[in-house]
Image (cartoon, rainbow, N blue to C red; front, top):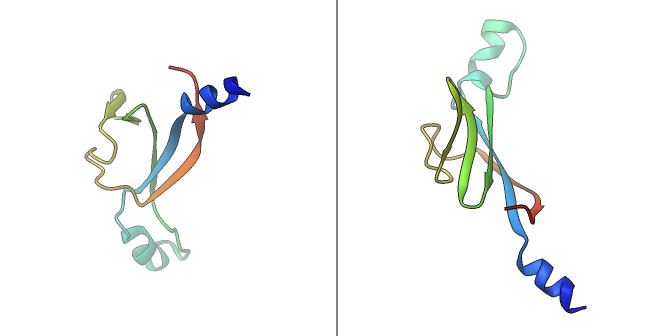
Length: 85
């Protein structure tokens, strides 16, 4: 029983940050330009251990969560926990 308590304390939350790169313009302009509605132009990042990890032009980068050049995320989802350092 004691092991499960220690195990729970060592779990770290992993989140998915989702950004609309068009900042809402895809949804408003796509019907007239494309004839269909596109909700957004999506970019994602994974947050773990106090870092936001994302792919950008030129490779994989990391930054403090919510402090990338993409601005604040449009959606944040808790996707699980990790024990892996």
